[in-house]
Length: 202
Image 1 (cartoon, rainbow, N blue to C red):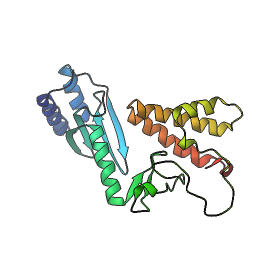
Image 2 (cartoon, helix red, strand yellow; image 1 turned 90 degrees about the horizontal axis):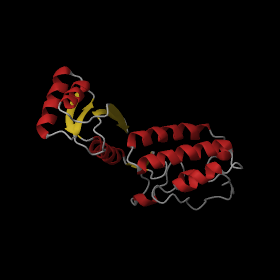
Image 3 (cartoon, helix red, strand yellow; image 1 turned 120 degrees about the horizontal axis):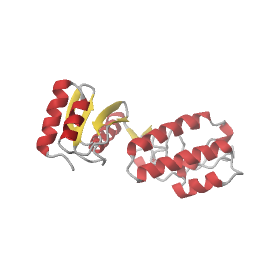
Image 4 (cartoon, rainbow, N blue to C red; image 1 turned 135 degrees about the vertical axis):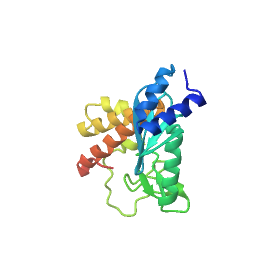
């Protein structure tokens, strides 16, 4: 059962007056609302906690810092990401999910500073010199199906197979709407990429 507007208002009141998001969840549970605990999500340099009601855009009680509000974490995330992009002149790369500065009036021509690929297509810009180095496959441009297949090929380097497995999990989580889980996998990807030897980077 989803909460009514009256129940959300009361849950908000209880959270504000106790300074505890758990009070909102306890109240909603007592009203027969199905909850899934208190979750956290971050975007740019901001983060919130929220009473998880199951879906990304379920209207619930959210907490940012000391402030409580009625919203959905999905709406908060979109608004925060859009504001960050507008304020800081950045765009989120569609393949590695990192923010990168917009370096052109046409954002489609922006090259990700983390992976060196166009943020929308994943294609590599034409080389500016003849170093000829492009040995490692760009796993960030593969589909989940291709990544799963790459993991199974034992002749591929073990660190890249590990990266491909985590990348596939991140994609699967995003497609299933499990954004907090996807974000955790994507953070792990960034850390793993930094540990790769230069010969295995793209």
